[in-house]
Structure formats: structure tokens, C-alpha cells
Image: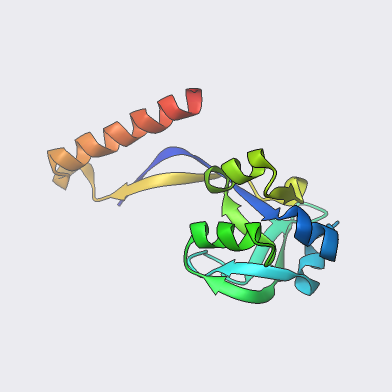
Length: 147
């Protein structure tokens, strides 16, 4: 298989201002294990969230909370409602962060360097419509990042 990077992908740890007022702001990832969290079951690590550790290693924190969802949009709505901390893709969190309905926390501990990839069979057997679509996506992400 061929994996072609389409664009960068980053996540944010978010909570509502009301939740932060009630439970406090975590100062380190391990604090989240004692705070309400919203788990998106579509996430790769489910209820084991990974963060940058104090050194070069990463740290895994097991979280739990009042709700599990299977959509980042549902996780965002639950976080805005004050049900817990959640991890969201940056483009899903951005409107609510900009409006002040969500606040990002532990920004310096979020792992970076992820991307969005198109994965497809070897080029020799690739249909033209797939090649054109992947080229379109590469162009779309490139122009989106430049804007």
C-alpha cells in the first residue's frame, strides 16, 4: 500500500469554562485520571490518552467519565455542556474555542506530528479516478493550509 500525506492533523484537549471552574485546570496529564472525561470510542487509544512526558518519552493516562460517544461532534457538544474534558481534532474544536465556549488545556503536553493520509494500492493497479481524487485532496489540503 502507498500512504500519501495530505495534510497536518493536530488535536486539542478541551473543556468548558464552567467545568474548569468546578474541577480546576489540570497542571499535568496525570491529573485527568481524577477528573471527568468524555471518551470518543472512535479514537485510537480510547480511554488511554497519550501526552508528552517530562522527558522524551510519552505518558499514557487512563481516563473515565460520565459519557462515551462515537463522534467528535458529540464529544464537542458534551464538552460545551460541561460534562468533561475531551480530546478533539483542532478543526472540530476551533469554532468553540474561538467563541469561548471551550478552553484548551495542557497545550504544551499534546503530541504533535500527526497527519491525514490517503492510503491506496500500489500505483500500478490504481484506477485513474482514485489517482485524480488523491491529487485533488493533496491540492485541497495544501490550499487550505495556505489560507
